[in-house]
Length: 438
Image 1 (tube, rainbow, N blue to C red):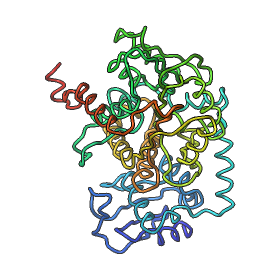
Image 2: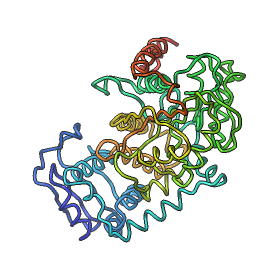
Image 3: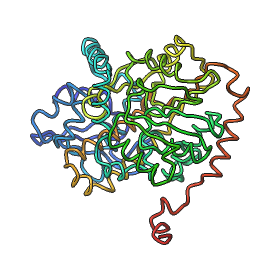
Image 4: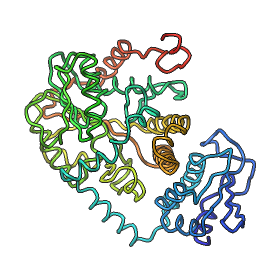
């Protein structure tokens, strides 16, 4: 316990954190049992956790992110009510943020170097490993994603336009995200669009509905593509919006526009040259490519061991410098960059709440260990975008600067037009109104 005790004594300065070790001994950190940091809000009072296994404290201290996640998954770490794992993670990381981010990383330089080497090797996504990694992440049961995503199954950041994100439903925020992205593509009826990493098909179908464009969506998860095809058939647009189980590197032809939403996190840094070279070949001379991905507000880094092992094998969140420098080498010109700072934290918060709401169903599909793993993933990701340095990048690439208007007003105007045209009916996210409508 001494190593974990040393870390917590340094880290916890605001509010109070109480740890009961497996032998019943209690450790208190912080000075004010009645205070609770404003950044977290909600439940007052000290956060209490119990370590139920003799190896728990050492496992957490030696491998902070991997160890804490596993300890929670295995029930070696239990958060006492009224708080939960999300409260604990936000509380500890907010305290560490005030001290400086390095207080969260009590690792030796050698261990950090080892993590980087392992992460770099894990980021080699050849066709076979890319398909395997996609299936690990996205071929979980459809029913799981139905429980925590919006109805369109957007598994990427939602866009909260209002000052009070809590006043906006996840459904509306996801609709606004699609409008915000589409507005940057300067689309016209009849254009051909390639949607790389098309997910469950929502964005591709949205683009066709709003502009009458033909869309080809590609992804590597079998169930996603099967679901996309079902949606296109059900909407009667399968001839205009086509989906293929295919690696983007195997796509041929020419397209007026290319979109990739939540894709670059899965490409792997070693494959960025291939991505930018191949997409450059696919895009017509006057075309536009829009990319939306998670990103680092600071310099390049590496994926933490827990996320790499349990959630996104082969995944890596890029720094802006990596995306821009690599794209420039293959003839791309960057016309617009937008940093979406806290939007994903609010998205993840809502996903967490919906997961908790459907606990019984999710544990019935999988088990309690999986459920706790999923909660830790969502809460840990939220803290990275709320207390850490993670953002979302939206980058507009062109071959020719004449492809886009002189000023950014067109984005604002087009986004407003799309929102007005595609407003989400209130009954879609209000259970009482939905029941009445049915």
